[in-house]
Image (cartoon, rainbow, N blue to C red):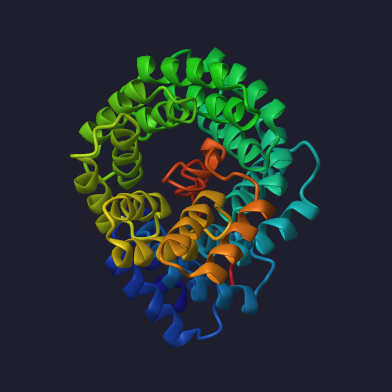
Length: 376
């Protein structure tokens, strides 16, 4: 009877009948409560239905009962990874990598998984060498090279970004994302002309790529090419009307071009979408101060200071306002801060892109595998 129940569960699972297979494996557990095989297969059924959090305790129970089942620890790591529990997933992958034969397919897979776990945790300096090793052993993998380029960018390894960019071009000569990464690297190195060329190439490759117009517009804005910048911010908003950064910089650009009439609408909408942006508060405060609305200006400058305490422009404007209001001591304190701060207006583009650091969605190339079924 136990063997018949086991065979029935296996057959249902192989047929893709997950609901009945789960019932059958639970029936096995009623007669064999210490069956690691049953727990392993129940975990696999949950994982194949993308119920990763439910799969984890089942895999852990199977490991507790029989840690020697091949593939079981990898399946646990994958379930943790795909369920967003990256730190414990990393621990499982690193443990497996230590015992994987060097140069083997297993070693390649685990190197990639360890690298992607570091990547997902935002540990880009740790991710980069692992992703570089994996990429060297998988020369046709475009997505892997994009992840490597992101890791190099966010760990400020700009030569690595450009090297990987050239490799990406051999796989996809029209990769807008790769052009953007190269542009961000050049911008961070203050090669603004080069960065503009890369972002123009990205726009040409795919004008619908998220943030491509914002990236180009921001670099143009830093170089005071305000008319061109405004055009790019508007193009980003045509792609995504809720792009708060484009609204904020479009509002500022209108002010720089002495067209302040439309600026408040853009700036207030930016705040409504993302109240953590400092620039709209600063610009609105400046407009209030110029119109002698000092109380309103003070509230906006104070909010901007909280959001960007290292921005010299905010402290300078606040100091001027305090002086105009006769608050001499507070004005002196703000002017003292401006002398100790570096100008923060032209931060690197990679610090301004509203999408933030990249995150992997998962590792679709590494599916869970059914454990072998030794007799219990």
